[in-house]
Length: 137
Image (cartoon, rainbow, N blue to C red; front, side):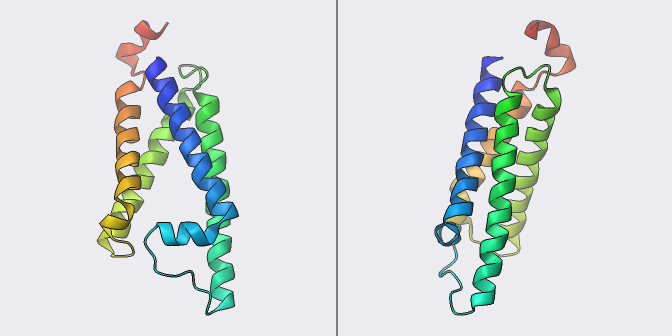
C-alpha cells in the first residue's frame, strides 16, 4: 500500500508544482512546452494564453491536492485513485494527440510524456483491485 500512497503523493506534488508555475509564470511554461516565443506581438493573444494557462494551472493544483488527500487512505478513497488513473490516461492521450497533430514536438515534451506514462502504469499496477483487497486490510 505504501507504493500507491507514495506515487499519489509524488504525482500530486508534481501536478501542484506545474499548476503553480502555469499560474505565476505563464511565459516560462509557454517556452517550456516547445513554443518559440510568448505571443507578445498581440496583447489580446497574450492575455488569452495567460488566462488559459492560469485556468489550467488552477485545475492542476486542485487535482494534485485531491491526489495527495486520496493518498492518506487509498482503500477508503478509492474514487480518488480512479480519478488519478483517469487524469493520467487523459493527460497521456492529450499529449500523444498533440504530438500527432504537430502542435508540439516529441522532443519538447518527451519528459512530461514519460512521467505521465510511468505514473499511469504505476497507478494501474498499485490499484487495489478486488482480488487484491484482502491483502490491504
